[in-house]
Length: 144
Image (tube, rainbow, N blue to C red):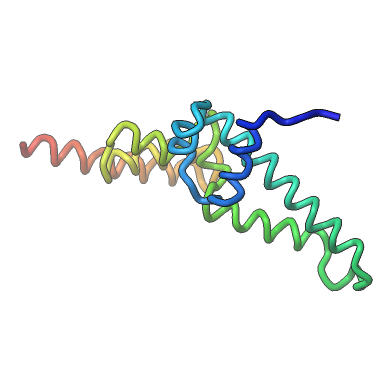
């Protein structure tokens, strides 16, 4: 049986108690990488999902009322609000990068649309949106 260090247990508890905490803040607080925070969140959500499914299976309700696919969609829906997967590729959440670089609204949207272009919706549309925000930023910069 594998034992968990006190630091890991504290990190787990913190993530469970603060599910919407920013990865960068958690990483700084616990002196770990943001990738570690993302991995831990994923493991905790997976364990929570399994626990919900186990509880459901142990109850005597007919399985046709709430299939496991619906239960996993509920967990997934929460993730889509707080930490969508199309913003977490590459080991850092897009918003954390934008805030760390203090990019502001226009450049932040450029990064957002470029980072999700291959993962959400129509790639060309995302790139055109990024271009629109970039053009707007260039216009503002040229007026200064």
